[in-house]
Amino acid sequence: MSTFDPDQLSDSPVVDRDGQKFGTVADVYLDQLTGQPEWILVQTGLFGKKETFVPLAQAITQKDAIQVPYSKDQLKDAPQVDPDGELSLEEEDRLYEHYDLAFSADTEAGVDEPSPDESHAGQAAVGSDDAMTRSEEELQVGTVRRPSELVRLNKYVVTEPVTTTVPVEREVVRVEREPITDENVEQAMAGPDISAAEHEVVLSEDEVVVKKQAVPKERVRLDRDASIEERSVSEELRKEQVDVEREPKGR
Image (cartoon, rainbow, N blue to C red; front, side, top):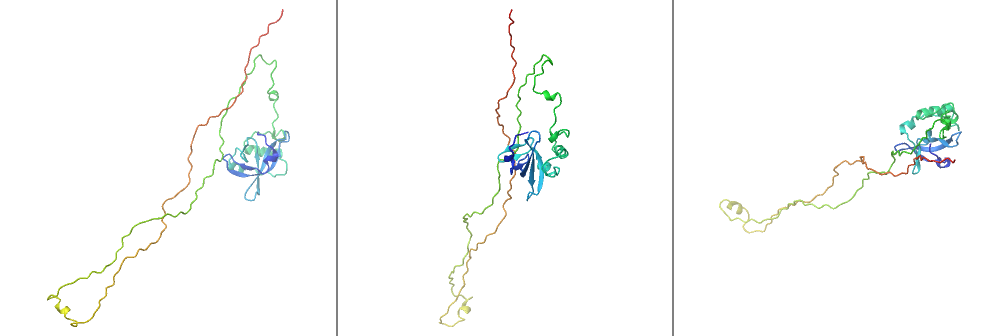
């Protein structure tokens, strides 16, 4: 179990194993034997109306939040226990079973009593045999998924100038003259001999008309790809060594 300061746990955000926020620490429950924080009461929901007990075993501190090694679904499905200031053995038994943690109901506050063989763990067995056990540390490296950055799509409007050409047609006047022939002499002599007259022709031209229309061009979305890289880890490991000492006996 990691060591936490109860005062620092209060009001801390709690995230699941994938780094997604689950809730906020509302209260801390201490182990009755060791006095260390063992459970946190996490408030969830829009107004913090739901309260869930989460064990601090295997929890770690990442940035300003407490990360627990459970999925959000497993946290949501935790047994509902009345936060009355103390957990009974039966309540702890149910919680430990839900979180797949070892628990013995025969001991107070969920701490297993060591067996007779385990009670002497770490002490040299004098007279048991003539062998000495040599131990050494082995490096175990794993990964913990946590949020690295937030990426969002923002759509905004920009204006850019566009220049194009369009063919424009306009009419121009052209004066045509034709001589008097037998075919048009009657039309030519239809009017008075000498008189003033005028004739009008309406000329037309194309006018450029511009309008704008929004046209969908593409769909843009965010997707995630996994990028794997190798990172080196350096650590110092301790190991025990055995030397043979010889002492000559005096005469």
